[in-house]
Length: 548
Picture 1 (cartoon, helix red, strand yellow):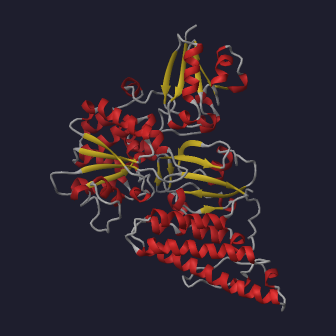
Picture 2 (cartoon, one colour):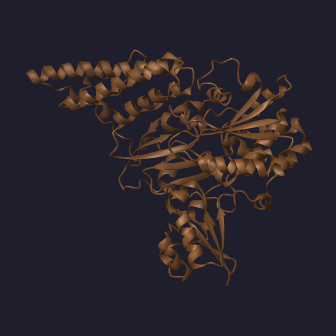
Picture 3 (cartoon, helix red, strand yellow):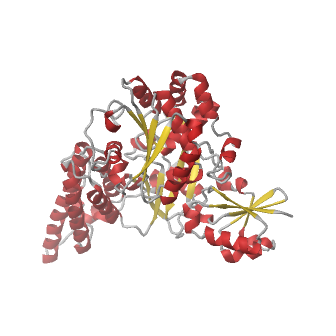
């Protein structure tokens, strides 16, 4: 019986030992065919090996090179997963953007066309630019990079802009911690992204595109360059160029990215003018994230109604959610908007990898808010998260167990902003540095205090006008001893530091030029408000029935 093996060459699978597994397969089954596919996205099972015997495909994982002989002998039942497409983690998904994940060879044009590739581009060329713009608008597609701006409106603005030269720019500078969907798409289904960009160019009148990929993604860069060369004749006269970033987080901001492509310092541009009017090299430019552009082929091939039927409210379609951090089943889970945070973390992700209780979840990367289990009923939706002072960003979810120190997480947010700031605006450049210093004082005061010391803040407000975390009345008790005087001094210092942090966040949120400084207050204030005990306050009681 002939054997066919399917093994991912995704960067995560390689990091987990996929090449060693491939070498063992060649050594023990030299006549078998080994197909290097994209990843299914079940990262806790990588390397995931599929074996096809007589047309039946069975998965095994996680596999090591030492497991290969047992798998070939049919003696590895402890690793057997059955048909991978029937695994509960996969079966529960709605895969539109990642429909080919785990199924096709990334650079095989035959695989791509056999699974519906290029149908969207062919349809676009049939119906014309105006109809394409209408379809994208009616689909309800919003930018998947974090801002959530309607893609159809952005495209129409560029299409209507005057000028002989226009550009499409794909923002593949995936810098958020706990995110990897862009990387997986570029490594696993690069033609899908190329097709989406070609459709965007056709609809807006742009003949040239740039893909800006962070240097930390060497496998994605190599795959995209190979795919661009292989598909050049299919998308012509549209041309695509790959540009490699230098690792600056701020270059994920669209105008900093444009400066970097132009060979200039990666710093934010003031708006207006908007990039849609005056973008790359001063020309009208569409800037979209990888996932936004990769959703386009489905919309054109299947129709905007087929895409818009998924989701909730103004959040239409699906979102490839990335589960990371201290989580038992980390990986990529694409689903329609509307699943609750608790369902994603507990039911799909399986809770923490450590086995301890979930204490906090950060959604939207390092600038996202921290949500406690009491907010796990929040639907994964742009407006639902905004209503609770959060954001979904690029769809990354990072899980923390009950050992996490939220004051130190707040400090990390300020330190991250200080390190990554381009330095152009004062609120971001100096506010983040002062933020680190102030939180350091809070942590030091917390360590020196014999009891929580924020009692006098009950019912008060910061100068920013926002209520500060409440404390229990028991914390108001004290003595007239010397230690009590010292405690009162510590209370005053901590009160001043906490008020200053709130004021700093207010200034950064409304005074920064871009989202780096503007969004840093989200993790800081959410940590302060939801976990006051880590800043010297008393723990707030979670609502009955909340997930621990």
